[in-house]
Length: 214
Image (cartoon, rainbow, N blue to C red; front, side, top):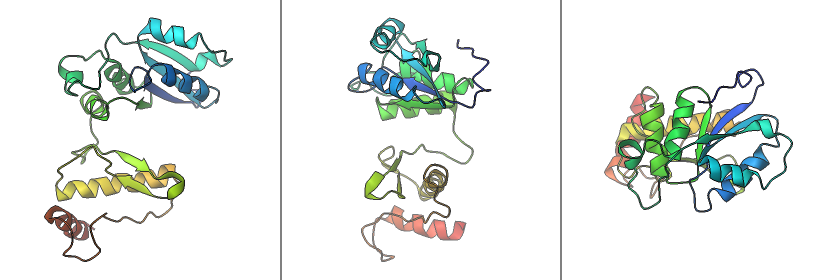
């Protein structure tokens, strides 16, 4: 178990990274962690096979070594495995261990380049959901194409209820305020047209529900 009494005193953001998740893991994940560790405002917990991660870290020379910690995880979720395996069969896989570190309060955020479903299930199972939120959502920024625009949901959900569209809108609004510094975000529903009769029945119900909720 990681214990660092200085973490809460030095103002750093503590990030638990699934070092074994992703197409080019762990090499590229470790390389990114080393680059991030050059900053003074971040502390990284690399989660995965200790032997492999220490070998990868040995390839780099960086002075801020205390900013990176290696945490052992004996299992890995592969892309072709069902995501539910992270809960029932591989609770000690790297993405689950990373989620547990956040749950315990030793880290502030979880990052994984692996299966988004496995990351979502790990977060739900080990970290829990916010009150009033029944579905997780993938939030994405459009970058330079539309620098002040956030899209929610980007693939985590296929079939949603109208009320869940509203929670996605709230999540996107908070994201825009906190991370993009948009003071008063405008919320819109991506649809096949602007007319009230356009789109699916669920989409039309979501518009109606948002109006009465406000």
